[in-house]
Image (spheres, helix red, strand yellow):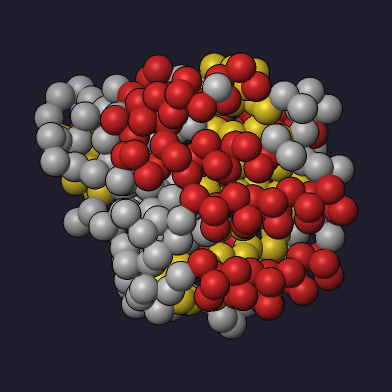
Amino acid sequence: MTLAFISHPDCTLPELGDHHPESPRRLSAIEDQLLASGLEFALRRYDAPLASREQLCRAHAASYVEEIFSTAPAEGSVWLDTSTSMVQHSLTAALRAAGAVVLGVDLALTGQTRAAFCSVRPPGHHAEYDQAMGFCLFNNVAIGAAHALHTHALKRVAILDFDAHHGNGIESIFSDNPGVLYCSTFQHPCFPHRDNGQGSANVIAVPLPAESTGTEFRMAVEDRWLPALEQFRPELILISAGFDAHIEDDMADLCLRESDFTWVTGFIYDCAERHAAGRIVSVLEGGYALPALGRSVAAHLNALLG
């Protein structure tokens, strides 16, 4: 099976500072590993389009979208909160990142591919309905899910998130929405230091203590995600694919390895085969230890290839 790989050179343009972890080098590390592993030849590449304001506003307040457009600097930087800044090209990169997920959904739901991976930055899962946070401007996965529900008239979309940090933005946008099931694992306590949504029927949030290994992670997925997914029977699965839970990544204190990302991707692949005609759109979130990020994404893509 050919895997759609969606990215754009614009996503490499924002430079947030020499020591900022959310760096263009993240996408370069992925590209280097694709070549080294031979995965490059199993991919069908697509350029990410720019998301439209209409697409953004299905997941965000129109006033917030306007604020991001009007605040975007031509030079220098603008801080949106204590963890999130915009620099030159940030808005364009964010529009490409959201547009990549919209394209991935379109490709999967029109039968042009069964699975897609969006190699994009900035990440998105912390961006709330009306608030930037955690390096995130627009909530890429949420925009893709809203597009699937609105444009393709799906009834059931699952978002599965294994980033080391809780996807508070996805939760805030879809809390109590019966058309979306959001399942996540994450380190707790850890950024963003928010409550983790246990009160919402459509949110399966599984906090893990620091130093949790693949054993604890796999048990959480099997014990908590699997029953919810089998009951929900998603028509499409979106993945918030964060790789900062890797043992080499110092942005958190979890101890996952490439084999764990292979395992969870296989778990998701099997679920998609049972319920969603194999349709998966995966979107890069965190992952800041560059060699580990490249290896982990390669493991993830190999598993997506089935």
